Image 1 (cartoon, rainbow, N blue to C red):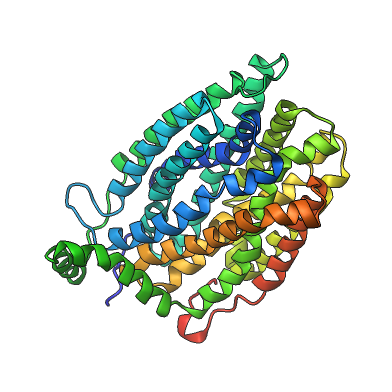
Image 2 (cartoon, rainbow, N blue to C red; image 1 turned 180 degrees about the horizontal axis):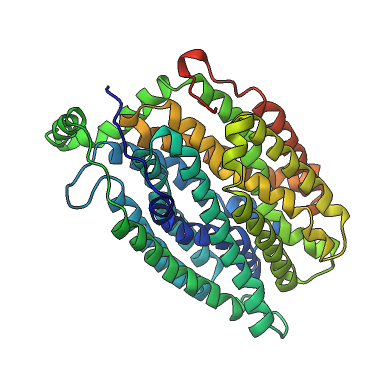
Length: 439
């Protein structure tokens, strides 16, 4: 298929296109730092945290590739191709965030997490493809690192709100089975941001109409019988996996260790501080939020700085070094017992998070065909959620039986996995038939 020529966008056009990521990532920030404390407040045991978080991997595995495949075959002159999907996802997320702190029991909170993850994944996947649709190859690095900036800013706001509201409105003893009132405000703000930031991008950024050849394919798809339409996305996913570039298969090995380790960190950073700093759950949750706030400040600051670095030294080298730094940060955290000094490793973590949220998407977007960008971004997300699913199913027994139920050992485990991911990232050489500049 003939490559679509796309106009160059200015800085503020790329900025407006990515504003919606602020709301999506605020929601993910709450999932990283506030959901597991809520589960603990409602009576969950530490060893059950992995399995209680299985909603994310399962919904991501199912929702993102399907939505990607469907959006590839969608076009409306009024609504566009990707925007209807991430707008619907934002509405679902907004409703769930408002309801989450009102959860009367653990089962209710777990159920809401499933619905919230469906909404977030419905918004996330077409948003990744949306950026690739709009930008020419020479602006993809800037586009995806701009997303990293908003990833950092959204999670930063979420986590800053947690420890600030805990400081302003907290206090008093924890009551078993009850969610502290100070947590409510963070979720209510997230509910507002989820829909308003997406609306900003929807209203400010027009989509590029597909070329005539694609429009004819979309029309043929619309004329299919209902059952054929249902089968079509699954056939698209299967065919795309069969034709997937070798580069993506190598990236999947990196992602296996990277995302397994990240899920361990997010689940066990609060229990870690109950052990190393002697905090109760509220204090530990607030300290975990400070950790996340710190690394997301770094992410927001360095995200755009990585653009010229990747152009000069190559995405592979910057990505691998960033993964190594993240691993060293996780190995250091359990050995620091001062609540201020323990924030320092988050500088390395923040650089790594900026690289993880931008560089792989830029690299993949340049080597996949335009007409399949949505489904391949969904498959890329499958490479994220499969390791997370494996983690939720396996790490509970590992934590209890091999790591002695010790959150310190869990953090060491995650650090070692990041070092392995770094080594595997050094294999990310693009084949000649897939090569493009600045990979």
